[in-house]
Length: 300
Image (cartoon, rainbow, N blue to C red; front, side, top):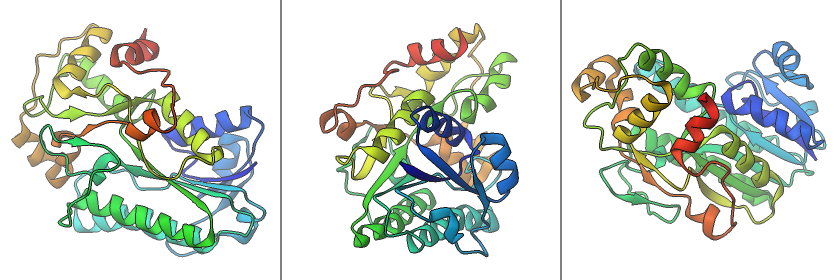
């Protein structure tokens, strides 16, 4: 398969490129710095500034699959008005342009999304059939509009998959930011620690993207989270145990809100999300279904 990937130099993207290359697929990437991306990943790469440029025609020529991982990092800094605009446009506008540039050869469009499409309240249970309310938070608006833009590809008879990802555990992402704090003995739950934290091991999320790109059964929205979600308190204790660090330090919600403003919702919201479709429709086999096993694989 000839596969075009955006966001390929990111945490998930790098691992995904290597997996697809091992499976002997032909990979091309789009990046703001194509030369650097090509050297880093060892694949053909094209420059693309989504804000001011259309997709280079040569990048999508004869392409079978597009995997879109592009998006500004949600966890970097406060959500100012300008930052919100950047976060939103990096997902919506880039997807709109990719859909518009889709060649006749395209069979599948696999696009990132996030569990942030759900309200994230208390113990409420979320699977792919949950009806999202009309009044949306900023995170919900991003995910909702992102999936709507992606779904437009279906008018071209192209199979569409939106991967609603939870917290990805691996050598990068959220854990990379948490490790120094835990190693100083300052790790622990945020808020009351009762909020649900849906997680997934990097190997499993890469497998989900890989199979979604190739398996014709995969369509629509899919929750990409492990089948055993935990509360934040349990996550902090499990990570502390693996690292042999104290987890008594608790970060009150009001401090996080003072530091991050609206972005504090990323840590304080409660997402009791399960991978209903992966398990019941596709019989996807998770390599890391339990948190202790996933953390042990990464840090033992």
